[in-house]
Length: 183
Image 1 (cartoon, one colour):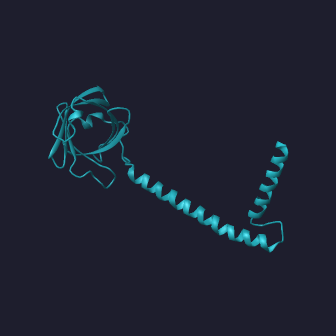
Image 2: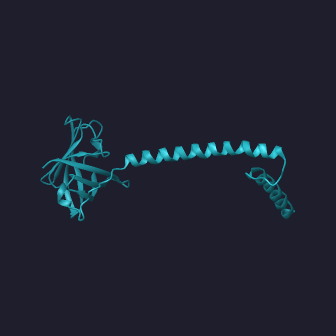
Image 3: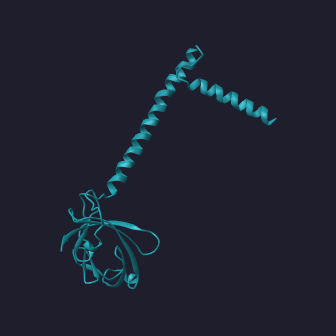
């Protein structure tokens, strides 16, 4: 019984595929009209799907920041002192945000210094460190005081004054590209 059902389903599939072939074996004009009508519809969906996927790819590429002139050896000391801004893309910097590294402390300033977050930096290796939040005046951020963020330095491009880091507090990593604007 199952084999008979499979055979019947196979015949239905063969008939359907025969109808969809661009060069049908049958001479019937009825099938040729169906085929000619189906091809533009199918192509329209393929075209729209391709456009959608292409646009999503472009958007995803815009959100990823690449360091083009990266150093052959990452200079992890590059971040130990200076003022940095967050460079979201090659041409966009986060408005009003900066972070200053000095004497094993980091002070993040938001809204051009209206709010801050001060952290103690403890280097765990040459290219990784922990930032323990000491104080903040950001409304609703009192629960981050005492929290530790783990950071790794991934790449540097000293000629462009860029450094790529990734940081996490819990399990999810966030990658940032910082541009040094002051020593």
